[in-house]
Image (tube, rainbow, N blue to C red):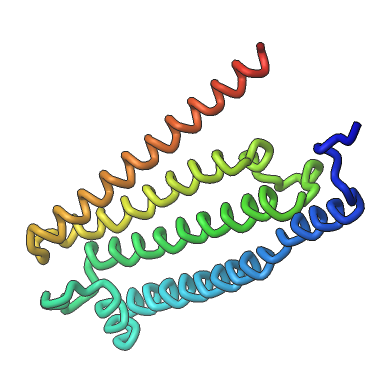
Length: 203
């Protein structure tokens, strides 16, 4: 009797499936583009760090660039480098580092999960989180990284709270809370899925 579940042309079906699976390599230019974006962030980090060091040494051009970078629209810029200005610049540098960490997680974790294995099992510098990375874990780590970046921006706003109207501060705080709730929801959903999968394996 004819079995309707058997493909009429298994070789053609296999070639089509192989072609569709190979389409994952279309993501490669995207990850290469993120690497270029990482290079831009590295360049920006060193420019800001150079200006901070030169400003501390008394360079007037670097000092003006620092004031422009951390100035609040409508506020009077300080006349000299002070602790608050230094703190804002350092927070900006930390922000760049955290975004770079986010890029690394997307590049390495995304490539490993969606494109191809990197075979880093014996590499001494292999990230610990890469051993159990999957789409859910990557999504949770990205959410936590975004919360960290949001925290830096919120802290910078609080430092300059006297220069802001209440509405922007409230809006940024609400956005940060939404990020927190979203991360908690993602983590809770991932936990439910993990427990369900473990229960299915036991039965």
